[in-house]
Length: 284
Image 1: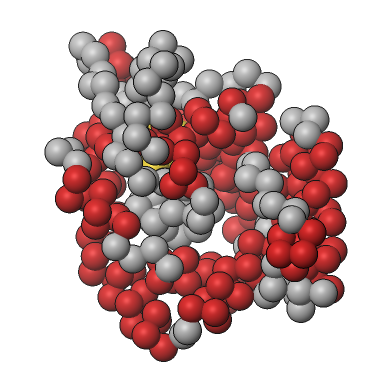
Image 2: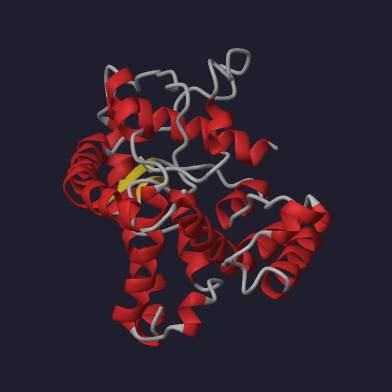
């Protein structure tokens, strides 16, 4: 992220979160209760960072491996630990959900489909590996701050091996040769580790499902992402992020459609699946 944008991002987000918190408190007083929901099998929502309704980080498009977190009724014995993520801003969130939905079907999906036809799968996997390797500092520091020293070491080794033997990270040699798996950690999980609750649910334009806590973690991740220092100019930076997002979308076309088709209320399904997925991550 360019220097001036980094300088204004955090204050702007903090002010936004303060406003949302105030609005949420007022809205919560007028809300009788929250709907309980069940996840739709096969959904991950995002991981989790990016210009996407994915991370829908959450998000209609998902990072590889996260689908397993939401198998058939994975929380059958944990109804007390997960009720549903508070959603006092539901009208606003639904509006942004519709916006992200249209963005996916009218922009991301057509572009992703065309991109998929041009770039072979092996090329798209290499590109995904490159961007995954690039954001190692977010995962490594998140491990360190939670006292997960083994995970911290694994991330350092993965980065060194993949950057050298893996040709700048285009090949995941650490996983294929050393069986060193990606440590799926972020700053939102760090905040949860130190006792911060999720706050209220947020569905953010372009970014998709999140929470107050995870939004704060996402902002912190901007300062740990090497891309923001390697590409300091605004539009080139946005271009790289959009390219990363498009590449991810091309590898998951059809999943969001399946979610919508299976759910009576896609908004509720996405919200509750996101809450359960993040709960699973913070408790592991």
